[in-house]
Length: 422
Image 1 (tube, rainbow, N blue to C red):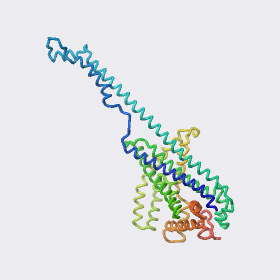
Image 2 (cartoon, rainbow, N blue to C red):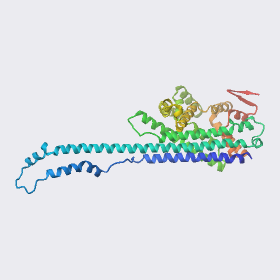
Image 3 (cartoon, helix red, strand yellow):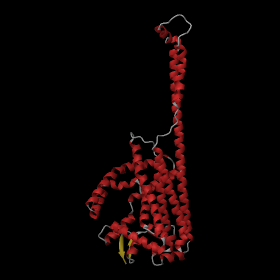
Image 4 (spheres, helix red, strand yellow):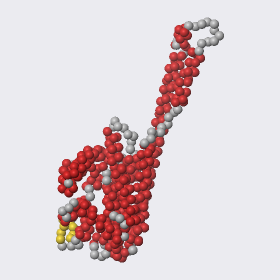
């Protein structure tokens, strides 16, 4: 009953997210196709430029350079040249005036070209921002509507599905503003916000200038973030469709969703710390061997220099925060600032996952991450069989450390940073 009542609402949310990611992916592809061709600009044909600069001079010189017919006197070539180039003849002055006129006309044409290109680029940027804002606010509106509607579900339906034993699955825990459904909607909103912010930064890149370090840094960070976020967003949608149709792994889809919502170039700051890098290499060596430790070292060596570059680029993307009063911010600037805060929040990593790994590490000597992956996959399959696809998706997406302890051993409670046996 619970799955039947909540299915329409969550299906609307997921469908909107599918449309969201698909549209943004198409926009990026169109951007790449457009940048692959020479930029079209307003240029005056060559023959018009000749008519503006060359032809008046030719017409002016034509009657002067032609000898007078009908005159019996034969002028020598030197006499004809002297009379033609004499200052009083006006030929030299005419040439100089024509050259100045041609330069002025050429300058006006160049200014006209720049003005037309500037107007086109500004209009295109405004249109892109309007489209992105429309998509984001549309998805946000659907999420808010779906957040309000689940409060109409009866308590009996919730208790029938989740049972009365577990406190974590009580009516208040699930349907309260801080319950499981709300947490899952926040997770979807974070993914949509991050994809919107990263794609917007990619589409609004300035013209590439290899001579400017800051310009190339923006391109490097944008090309690092955009493919990763968009690919994982599309992978999340593909896994969702596959899991909904065939009952496949739900935990894998939730992992991709979390990565899409939290990934940014700022996460490379953790790799810039020598202490963290050394711990990660040693941990990889203990769990996966020397070969994977060498791969981890190369990985850290590549991303450590990116950390400083990412900080500078990310700060430049929200420089309006120090130059403009908050009252004068545009809606897009508010979204950009919220996405920047979301990226900063992702610097600490997934603390909940680290605590889960600590629990499994205390119970199994093998690689705790691999054990956790297998356990979550099996848990997702079991929840799908018991409660259906969407309830299982919400439960896996909001699985806390308390839930892991309850499921592993009902007599164990997790209190902040340590386990206490009852």
